[in-house]
Length: 109
Image 1 (cartoon, rainbow, N blue to C red):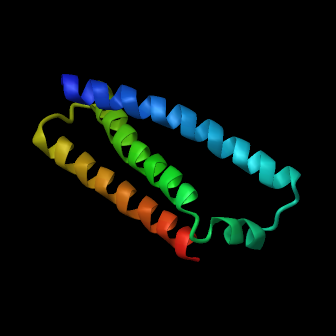
Image 2 (cartoon, rainbow, N blue to C red; image 1 turned 135 degrees about the vertical axis):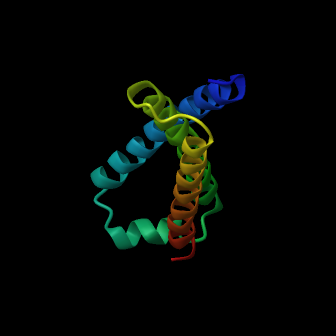
C-alpha cells in the first residue's frame, strides 16, 4: 500500500470511530426521548451542524471502505493492477454520491 493510501486509511478510520460513536449516541438519545421519525426530520431539516457532520461521515466512508476492500482483494484474490484500482475508484465515487444524496435529502426534507 502506498504511503498516501496508508495515511488516508488511518485518518478515515479515526474520523469514522468518532462519527460512529456520535451517531450511535444520537440514536440512543432520540430513542430514549421517544422522538418520532417526523420529529427527527424536523430537527435535522436545514440544520447545518447535522449536514456537516454527516457529510464528513460520508466522505470518511467513501475513503475508508474502498481502500480496505482494495487490500482485501489484493490479499485474497489474484486481482491486481489498474483495473482493480479503477473499479474501486468507481465504488468510492458511488459511495460518495449515494451518501451525499441521503445527507442532502435529510437536510432539505
